[in-house]
Image 1 (cartoon, helix red, strand yellow):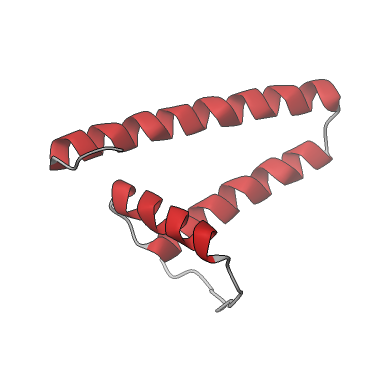
Image 2 (cartoon, rainbow, N blue to C red):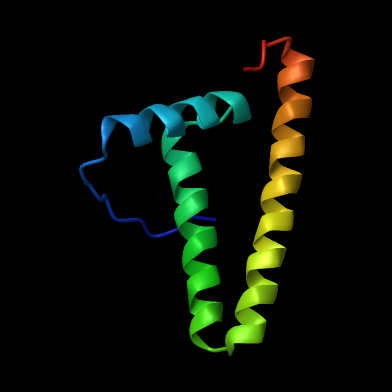
Length: 87
């Protein structure tokens, strides 16, 4: 299945790019895939926030934190499997 795509270029501070590169390496995915995933998930969250009240915002933030925690656990498991030293 082909997805329509548009090339986007933007400037990123070096420290942010270094952090993204480290996360992409830990996840064993390309930098662009990580950025797309991050933009996709954040934009979905922001659209949900737009349509709900403050209580729901708190719940969305909680859920996002739980998803992020699960993602970190998965990354740690991958790192251990690959034998990469964690900081």
